[in-house]
Length: 97
Image (cartoon, rainbow, N blue to C red; front, top):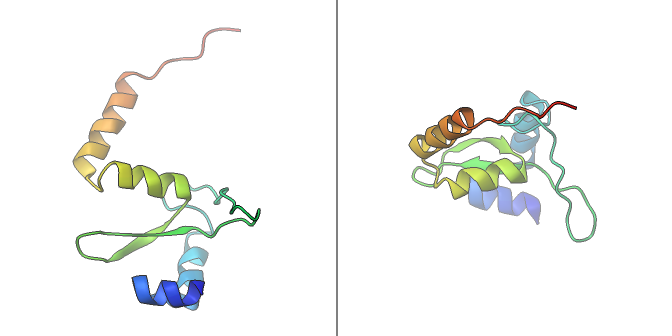
């Protein structure tokens, strides 16, 4: 079922997905961490296929958190830049001890 969804939705075969994951070292293209989200049955989920919603072009494989964050930012790099700048400007240092 997953293979049919990959092909129908993204034009990717399971082999294409695995090749992309291998190039990325089986980690998220953004945070460089492995997926840690599990299904209701307790199985580790595969990385998410990230794609441009305007062009449908596949960009890479992301963990659930990064994929959700990009979606919440409306796939807008200007908003993402503003978020990054906001975080840099408001970075708090750890209190001593």
